[in-house]
Amino acid sequence: MYNILIVDDEPLICRGLASLLEVSGLNIQHVYTAHNGYEALDYLKIENIDLLITDIQMGAMSGIELMQQAKIFKPWVQVIVISAHETFQYAQLAIRLGARDYLIKPLNSDQLLHSVRNVLLNMDRPVQDHSELISDLREHFHMEQPQPTRANILNQLVQQGRIETTAEALLLEQQNGIELKGPYYAMIKIRMDLDASNKSAIRDEKDVQLLQYAMLNIVNELLDKEWKHYSFYSSDRDISIIIQWEEAEYGDSSVDKMNQLEMVGRSLHFNIVKFLGLQSVVGISQILKGREFIPELNNQVDKAIVWNREHTDHHVFYFGDFKWELITEDPSEEDIATQNNLIVEQAQQFINANYAQKGLTLNEIAQKNHVSPNYLSYLFKKNTGINLWEYVIKLRMEESKRLILKSDLRRYEISEKVGYESPEHFSKIFKKYFGISPSEMKK
Image (cartoon, rainbow, N blue to C red; front, side, top):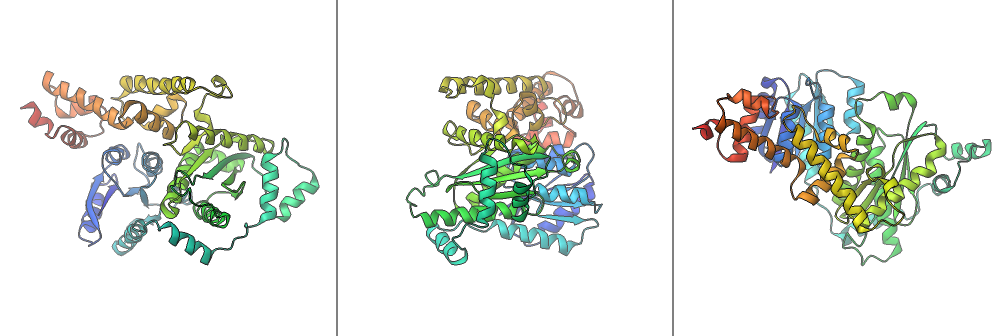
């Protein structure tokens, strides 16, 4: 049974879509509705949402921004976008962020149900037994590395101290389908971890190659439509990805590129686990301008991956999350703990001072601490034992309880003071947290 969240700033559309899905006969447990992105985020943080259906234009927070936030909290959440405008830029961003469909208003009931049905059916696909998986891979995939000459050129490119830009070198790249025009570049590296996957018994090199080939197929399936990239084997356990943006592409986006890369990293990790039952570690570089910095990007992803040794229960690492200037070549456990504790303490201080701010997001909290939302969420839960947004809600609820019991403020005034967009949404969260409504507590 699946939970679906519908988000639209037009209440009639929300109710209509909810009613349609509730009588559709699909395997749906509950349909939630929200009228803006901030309400939707609370549902995503406190309910087990499987599918998000969101409008694209909703005032303070767009559907694109909501998708971005949702994927930070739960990269497995599936998304269908609805819009009154057939705008290419919006559609492109939505697909890049992992939307499964982009539907244009006015919605056709059959079209919506068909889209939802397809998403739910794909979510039902189980991870195969390892022996069955290897058998299928042997049957359907060739053993040879795809485009080995191109992979060799790219490996030389990322490993050498300086980038060859001679006419001969550029011609060789062009002949092998490589066009690195940038000028902005980033890298992602995925390292399969057989031990963490309980597949340490796999020692047949051919089976390892099959798994690597399957990983490469997942990479290309996820990235080929919207990302200008080159993916290639960089060792017998690694797949490297070079991503590039032209000047106009890099500046023409409402979504931060680093957040996009982090979501790509988390999606890659999630899908490799989902479809291969294979654990991996993902390293993400910064974005640098200039082809000559590609070897440095490779160095960054390698350094980022090393942090899995310290955080074995975390799998996606961004180079920029770590204060390298404060870390020696071989940091002690105490050095690492000190840095991590400082990040969490600063986050708590910021939340304590700003929890009542309307529209407060994980992105904003992370930016104030100069770390990625993904890493902050992980560290906060690890150090405090509580989810970061649960901590925000706890502060809001305790303050609202105090105001209900100690003041004569009305419900809408209290809702305003603790950071909620509407009294109705505040009441829903309050009742879920305390088990009674604000008016019942007042009595």
